[in-house]
Image (cartoon, rainbow, N blue to C red; front, top):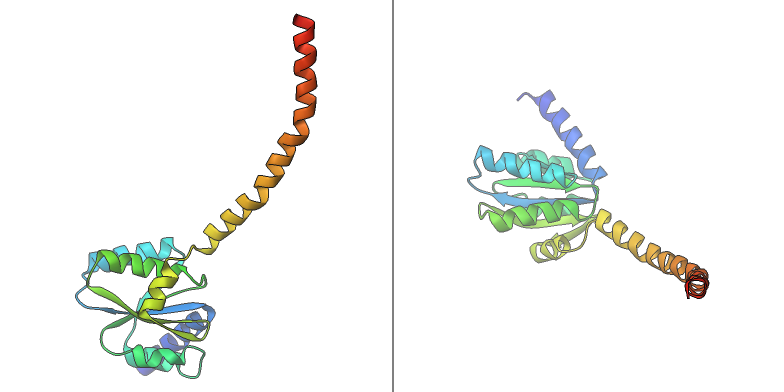
Length: 168
């Protein structure tokens, strides 16, 4: 890869990483092509991305950004997982790492705040934005459903009394 290609790659990665609210750094050793493909699919399904990038290029990409705290984690065979959702990348990567010991979460950066491995794992246990939205909709719609049933009930009682009197 020549210098211009590297500069373009770094600029692209900087833009993608800055647009993400969460960037997770993981150490991977010995993942084969099938395992990497499976991980990429799981990340895509979670609306997250996974990138293997040379540490020097990754360090250049995060330099001068809110993600600069990741620099000290970029040692050895590392990978980056990132997403706009503050939980998606962590959840997908931690789930995969629990099934495969060839990849290990090192840390992350959440909106400029550096997280340690334990904090990333705790973040992965939180519900995603979509799950939170569905729970919120359920909470909001339940009282409305109960109210509709309650308002309908007096009329139904009168109808049952009239029906019982007319049959008996």
